[in-house]
Image (cartoon, rainbow, N blue to C red; front, side):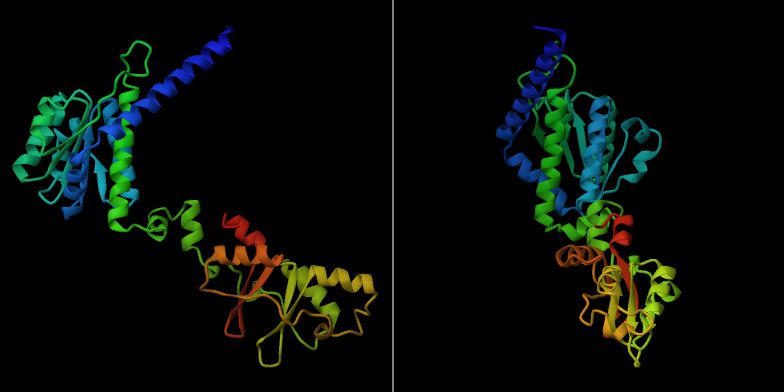
Amino acid sequence: MNSASNHLAAARAVLATEAEAITEAAAALDDSFNRAVETILAISGKVVVTGIGKSGLIAGKIAATFASTGTPALFVHPADALHGDLGVITGDDCIVGISHSGTAEEIATVLAYGRALGTPLLMITGAAQSPLAAAADTVIKVAVSREACPLNLAPTSSAIATCAIGDALAMALLVARGFTPEDFARTHPHGALGRRLLLTVADVMCTGSQLPIIAADAPLTAAIVEMSAKRLGMTMVRDSGGDLAGIFTDGDLRRCLERGVDFNGTDIAAMMNRTPKTIGAARLAAEAADLMRRESVNQLPVLDGKSIVGAVTIQMLLARQVA
C-alpha cells in the first residue's frame, strides 16, 4: 500500500469511528434530553453556554447555533467569567456547561454562581458520575466507545458527538418554537436565504431618471436613443395618461431589423409588446427572478397599479445574489 492509500485509510477510519460515535450518542439519549429542552423553553432569558479548551470551542459553536435558530444564547468563557463576565448571567437564564471529563474547575465556579441565582443548570458531559454532573440539574451524557485518534487520546469522536448533541438540542428547540424559514432569514439577512426571503423588488429596482420611458406616439428611433442612454435592454412605453402601455426590448429591435421596418416612419406603439410581464415593488426580489426565468425575459416593469414606479433586470438581481 502506497503512502497516499495509507492517508486515505487513516482518514476513512477516523470518519467511520466518528460516525459510530454519533450513532452511539443518538441511541443513548433518554429523558434527560427532554428535560433539557423543556428547561430551556421555560426560561424567559437566554442560554449561557460555557466550556474550556476544545469543549469551549464546541460551546461557542453550540451557542451560535442556538442564537441563529430562535433560542437567544451566548458563549461565556469560564476564565473570563471569573474576571467579571459572570455579570451577564441572571436568574432568568439557563447555563449549559460542556466538559467531556466533567472536572473543569473553572466551569464549577460558573455553575456555583448560577446555583446561587437560581439559574437552571445543564451539563453535557462524557462522565455522568463527575463533579460537574453532580452540580447540574440535568445531565446529558455523551459517552463514546473510543476516540477516532489512533492513540485514543485526542478528543475527536467525543468532540464530534458533543457538537452533534448541541445541534440536536438546537433543532429540537427550533421545532418546538415553530421557527420558520422567514425567522431564519431575519437572523441571516446577508445570507442567501435572507436575501431570498427579505429583499424586495423595491430594494433592487431602478427609479426616476434611470428609467427608460417614451411616449406611445414616439418613433422607433426615439426608442433606440432611450434604450442606448439608459442601458436596461428595453424601454417602457407610457400612454397619454401616464400608465404603462407596453415595452420594447432589444429582442424586439432585432426583429424589426430582420423585417426591414422603417424606423423613422413607424411609431413605437406599432411594434411594442402590449402585454408585458410586470411585478409590484412590494414583491420579493426572488419572485421577480423566478418570473423572469419562467417567462424567459430579462427585464420587468415595476408597477403600482398601472403606474410605472421602476424597472428591474436580471443583471440587478444577479448583482444582489438573488437570481
